[in-house]
Image 1 (cartoon, rainbow, N blue to C red):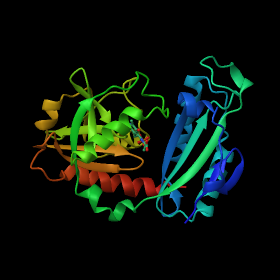
Image 2 (cartoon, rainbow, N blue to C red):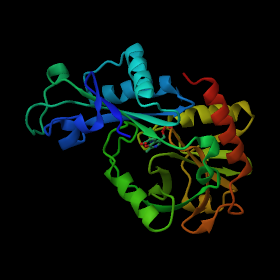
Image 3 (cartoon, protein in one colour):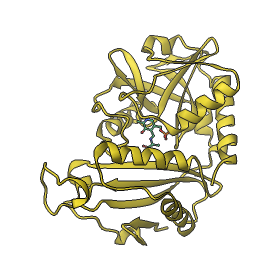
Length: 287
Ligand code: PDD
């Protein structure tokens, strides 16, 4: 089935959509994006994604003010036009097309941003056994730039790292910098030791996950202790449990790292419980 995508105000069949070859998103990766999960035809954490999108735009000086109501209407229209029940909505905003390739760009609103949305169908997380049975991860150096808090489309290193993982028989890669884990290729990383959840603190080192913020809130509500600090690969190997969070994985257990089992090598009980809590709570608030 051909999807209907959104390009600069128009809803068009995917094979009719066009963006200029001079668009800075294409030649400079000068663009930001968001992925909002959809379950039962409703969006999960939409407000958080829109707030982070505005922050990413502001950090790069892309002159675009997110109109919440307009964005909500466009996202909902995309769900309707594509009959999306389970999956995600991708939105990308680039600095736009200055008419030529040039490292220098004009300030402010001299260029009009390009806005593109498309939908992706994915299995319902409630019947996705791949995510409940847990992932095996490998490690690689984190060679990304140092503003990972901005959700840019500079995804070459994460894409190479994900591909390396799959080709070597793993499910994902956890990236390592100065001996500690930063994140998964497109998710935030956590371990649990003696009932304490350990996850890297917010900084320019990692994306400030929308799922992460809610997950930590739900964990606190359940009287779990949280330590926000970097952790080493050895700590992962000695942990009782590990898991990742994102709009596409929700909460997914990690059961081994570089071939070493974490805990008993099965999905941890806290990870599975938090997965269920996250899905239930976020569905209640879905719009
Ligand atoms: N990725 N860290 C990175 C590097 C990510 O790319 C993502 C999300 C996350 C989790 O953020 P959130 O909980 O807000 O989805 C952490 C999306 C899903 C993607 O690129 O497809």
